Length: 181
Ligand SMILES: C[S@@+](CC[C@H](N)C(=O)[O-])C[C@H]1O[C@@H](n2cnc3c(N)ncnc32)[C@H](O)[C@@H]1O
Image 1 (spheres, rainbow, N blue to C red):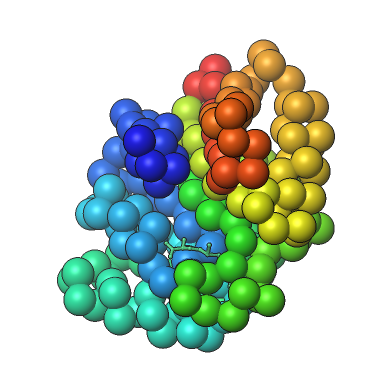
Image 2 (image 1 turned 90 degrees about the vertical axis):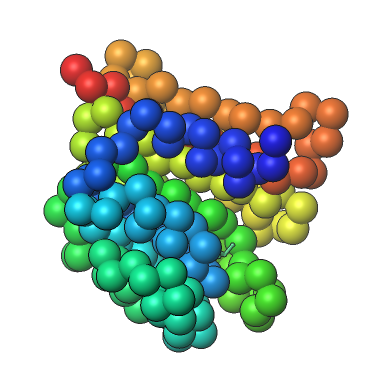
């Protein structure tokens, strides 16, 4: 199973066709398009700080005839300015494939996005975070997220780490579920 397949599998059975979803890092738009396909009667909010990401995602969504996304040129750290609540989200960290590798997600804004995102997530929702520890900032994000997510109360949340233990530098996932109670 690829990392992307694994990330998507954490969303299985959690989403209704009229839900609100969030792509925290639209990049080239593949995750945004996937989320759009899950909520034909709902809406996807997608964030990125690069104009190229918005352009590429706009093109991809047009090609696939999806018109249920709002693309936002701003940091995911500001999610609370744009989104009141959402059911599930994907946060694919790192840099845009084929783009400028120096424009990568950063630990401080990632932690703010995750903290605020979990606050805004509805009960029964899941936030899936893909981490790339093969570069220094990615390794730092992974450690900081582990520290943060370990503190969430097990009565209200399940936090799963999905990782190849025989390849510690390979990408891995945190999946945060807010229990429906
Ligand atoms: C690995 S790519 C995302 C891939 C994307 N989900 C896809 O399906 O193509 C990471 C993206 O995060 C974006 N990014 C970096 N910092 C950000 C921030 N603070 N807020 C939102 N996006 C950010 C980068 O510009 C880059 O496009």
